[in-house]
Length: 631
Image (cartoon, rainbow, N blue to C red; front, side):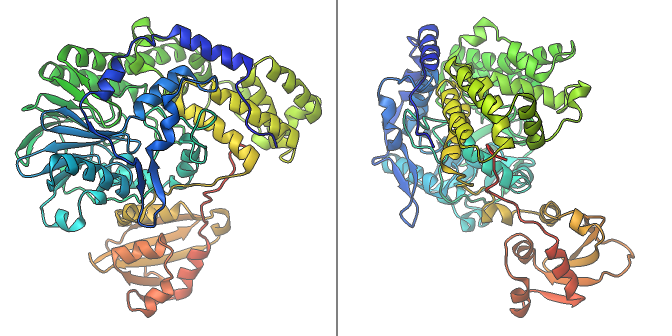
């Protein structure tokens, strides 16, 4: 198999054009990103209790050099900015930990302690960030935690800054927007295996850090790999204008559901003239549909909520900050920043709808759409994390679905069968590879990637095609301005050369699983039923939840696991299982041996125990190592 290549002549020329075209003499972002620096973490390595590295800022020190031909200069610039790490003062009494995870952790000083906003992904990075703050600002207790929204990089490190005991005792309330727990749990469990596998590509998990590998993900450098945790919120924010006083700090909230997350909120500090935009306004075009997979976000309401934030708060703010990137200071500057972000999402939405109503498909619109000059020239709208291309396709998907309306695409063959037929029409694998080499030499890498994919899916052991495809994806990565596109291309090349890396990080952490409701736990089990094997099965089990006196029934029929609370007179179940909610989750999703739980007296069963074994026998295990660039 080939080794990594340098940038081709065509990619080098394209990157050189970027360097000459974009306004690299505008250094305001660097001034803002460095403003207020108090101290850096040194050494900038965070380890877990076993000594394994879960975060290493030093791995990105190569960004201090000049941009090489193997990286898009615009992405190199953004990567330098997001790699800046340390404790920063935002304004009086407001501080941020930046560059110690994908996200930022913000600390608001109150009368007796400090409020923590979004405690990163991992316990270890959150604890390191809090320790850095305390080293320079004093050993203040954490008096409150706020989750801005339901993505794991905004709550996973919570047990690094507080404890379940302090939360339960009321010493540290946790605030979150309505719907937070439901969405946080579902995203990381229902499709968690598939999302986790694809996230390995999105964040370049296995890539070496350097000019030929991972340089950053646009939103941050990458994700930490420590222990993710969750403590459920104790206070729910449910309407715009809701105002609370926490440790003497007055905060007014703005609800923004359906924007960057299904459950999200911005908030304003009137006594400090500071506005937190959660993840709704950052220094990049964000994702409307992430490459790892998620529900499609709504740019229409996103734009409207930004307008609301501008009208309610911008004129009363001196600084705006978010849970990624660096703040923007000055009322006039922050208003323009928010306005350009608003215009960006609104324009993509409206122009995509205009084009689709003229019959254009998502792929066609993505290829043709152009941003207005005033938006295009702003560094904050560049596609480092989301992209115009895949966001436009997401908008099309949101309104029109996967089908482009052309009946010829309504019932196409799946990838492997389609690939075999393509090869037959194109003269066979050898002919396709030979022609692909000519296209590679011409710099037509998008086409090479498409046609070689046919060869690999038709002939998975075709070493020549896989070698050339690895080289091709690599060149596409070298030219990408988008950090996650670069990672996807380079990870594809890496796995073609080295085999699957699987899923390095697990989002369905024990704390997240523990927050599943009974309904969600059975939903998660239902998703694992091997339908065809269970077509003729009929199993009725009642689950008596000891700590709530609730009885939940599962009924397997026609390959579907139906479940519901038992109300009124129903035919008797074949088996009744009595257990606690936590033991229910442990038995169904945590892999604990139910028979051992029965023997230990934690679970009791009444009826045909064989029915439970039969049900478990129909459950399929998800595969965190599924193939992506091969069939």
